[in-house]
Length: 228
Image 1 (cartoon, rainbow, N blue to C red):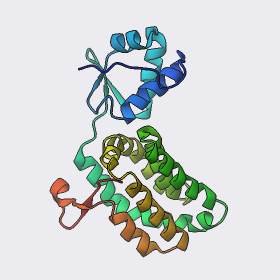
Image 2: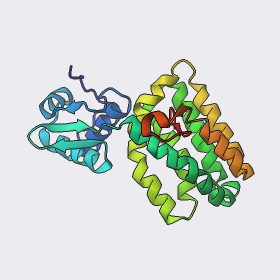
Image 3: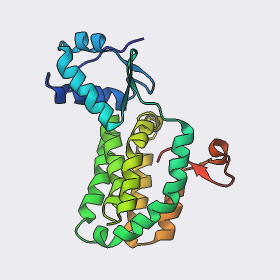
Image 4: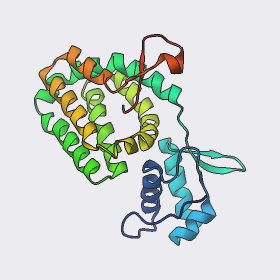
């Protein structure tokens, strides 16, 4: 059944305003992975012409959230459990290294930025604002790669981010009974990162991946992601 689209903020019929409304609908799970974004339906709901809508869909496609299939339309990208498990199996190895490389910056001028992402995550989870919580969640992890000064690590993160974003659009809703659990996990990660304890960081990160990766990839002894 098609969802009725509504403005997420003050009505803005510009392509950017339409983009933000559609993006929020994707990230809060209103339109699930694989769901179709029907132009006529959305245009009627939002009271807009097709032109800003098509520009917004193109921007979402460029971001990797939407795929356009000829003669069928635009659909929210689907991300398999196997894809996420494979990404996380690599992250478990390289993210501690990124944290090690970024430790000096994080203990110095970038420390407030790291702590602010945790606070932003806390506020978003308290408000049950799924898109904002995902943004904060990914900013937190992305900081280690961004501040590592390592181009290959940064490219890896950029290649994963959209798929992880779509995965989290489903995963964050599993915290509804205990929204602060995710915050506490990231507080621990931040603490060990600031201490420069790479081994402890790896252990805390592994706690995010509690299921056997072997079930998804056929590799024994690995772990897959539940929450990132």
